[in-house]
Image (cartoon, rainbow, N blue to C red):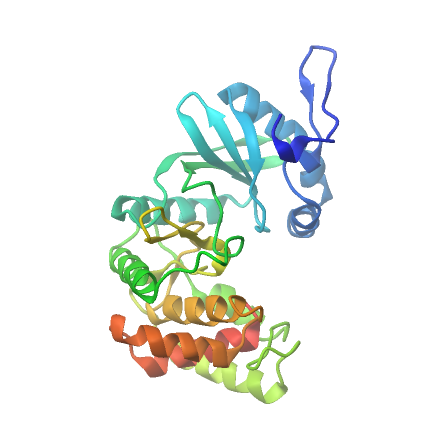
Length: 305
């Protein structure tokens, strides 16, 4: 029995099938996030949904992957070996992720997409993504002592940028659709890591954001390069998972890495000084406009995204 299942009561139904519980597949925090996003009925139906998928595809759960708020994510053993299974009712987002994974996986900077399909679930339609497992699934957020070199950060960002210059198999949303609404909620860490940004910071961030997105760039970005989606490779490389592709310029990805990894490795959150310090070390390895990178960091710091 996997270690994370110790203490979890798994019974059997009248037909001898395992009766699962939600805490086998998501932790308390993820369950709360998923319930807020998709509704309590979807979370309540998760044990039956995941139990059916495990049976039908002959998967044995190894461990759950934590940290996400949009899907149930498991490491499983199956007929083809160990892999990652991601299940979500957000079908459109999953289609975009699959398209980005195809590009990132082919370039070697992300996991290979092994399968992707949509089907009726116990409570509404669901999308299932099956991907290659990178390492043991641990990210920089969980292995902060295994810090990547500046060279590895630069090589990863260059590889993602090369993928982003190629057209995806479907049209991506723009950052206006995702980041724009957050500029009105003031839930971020502020420019200096404070609990909430000052009003003047939000006003400046809104103006900067609209300037950065005019006109809409013709490239796409990973869109979610926080430390939880950065995976150290065995050969010293840095790999990426869980893309959220948006139409934006590559400076956005560089800014997100600098701000979020630069802050988290020091135990802080969205601290602009930390982000700028990392960018000073990284900028010689990337062909980015430093002013645009700094502008994106200010926007991200104000939104807390």
